[in-house]
Length: 387
Image (cartoon, rainbow, N blue to C red):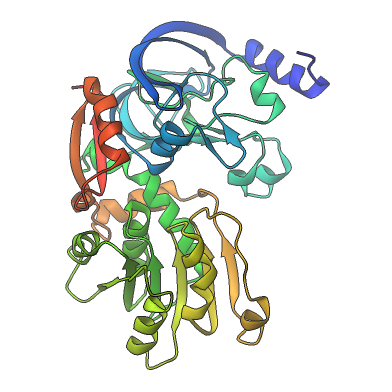
């Protein structure tokens, strides 16, 4: 394959700044659509003076992991080679680069899985999550510079015994925080980024659509940000019951949506808000109908935040204009990990009840099969890599 001058420089730089370590490790490998194996795999990882090695403890199964398993792609990210799954993780530092000063061997940590090019325009603007060259665990690369890099061409994730990771994206966790809770910092960061972009104000009413892990964590974040009450909408009543139990009674109100009635959610929101609607709507389901109808739930001057990834939809822009609705979109997060850890540390957000199922490392394939069609009471599955 012919490389551009920049792509060649990326490869050369990766070879110069760190000694490439190609080693066999046991991992959960997505070979292709519908084929997942526990096996030994070669991982080529440079270890630079700014890196640390982490022995993995807990890994959460994300809906994106399951989607790759079932479909092989998410938008432009298409599985093109065997890939280790997993991007929600915590562990213990086992090796430290010579220039790292804030971490030491034995530190308990969680890791932000998206690593941008620090010299890119969007990184310099602080929007490193939308850097086209971002390296994100368990995400097939499509940028030519990543495809050309032997250390990243597969897009391997963290569902393996250990990983090499930049120290700047590795964060110490409090001693009282479990490894399972620390693994949930990653999806919590999505909820925090969503609520930050929503600019929630004290006393706002918020509606979150979709009662998966991201939706539930977004509810908790919205309350922490000042929402007086959060309405959580989903067709599955059992999930709403779990969500209502995450905090004090009445703060999260579950609204069961009738899929056969396109007006079901709108009617319930207008009834509970005196016909006005809510100040903030955060769409986390990715359901095309829910996305298209989100504007109907917002009060004049309200804000719509799109987190889920729907198929293309039609939106009534004129209807939004006459009420001056503000729209925001979310792609992962940026600068959220320290704040998420602080909220967990103080107990302002408690994620323990969201963790419903536990699996050993050797049960990883079984765990993914389970999450392809989980019972309605399941929210988040955790794989214990050290078990």
